[in-house]
Length: 283
Image (cartoon, rainbow, N blue to C red):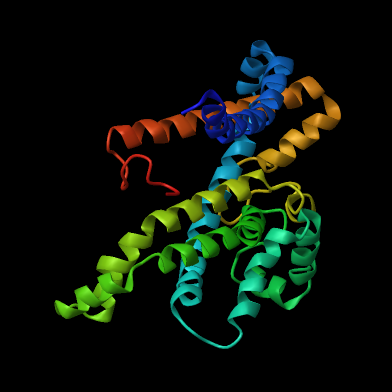
């Protein structure tokens, strides 16, 4: 092969490398700037602030509720969209995508008007002992609204990937439809469903716009007995208006905790302590 031919063959790979490095630089350089501005001393100081940990605690509690609700409600809808034929499927899929497309503040305003004090939904929730404003349930509600779409869509794609031949083989061996679903469909789709749940969690934790309307502050009540606080994104936003160095330190600490969680997942994968093989999540 001539030098010119080898250069032409290598060109697509080189271009891909340059473009990929550019995107990775865009991901990493702002984080580097944030960590440099925060300084190690500032991060250590923020790590001793109980207000940060209270905000993080309420965020993680609410996100666990939101992910559980998204799985309970979203996986069946994903299954129906993937495996069943019915009128209006395109409309329903568009409704599922709606929370992904609308601005965060619009989502918060829509939710507020739906559960406004004195309204039917508000009265029913109050009767059930589940306050829907300035509470952990408000945080979870926002997270479900903005994040459950990812669970539905990932579940739909996962259920579509299940081969019909595998289901027919299970039925030919005497498995009922329920057994085939539990033994073949659900395990095969499990990785995709898990990916959707992780995306739902990440989307909920990163939310702020709707929190500013429904849960700017979180007060003790049903489901939460801690101090008055805010979701961690609102906590950092409030610091930004008061002390930029403190806001950068809190944001850096959150980033480092997220990185530690990611590395822990990688290690648990390597040690075989998770219900999937290494590298399978999102595959």
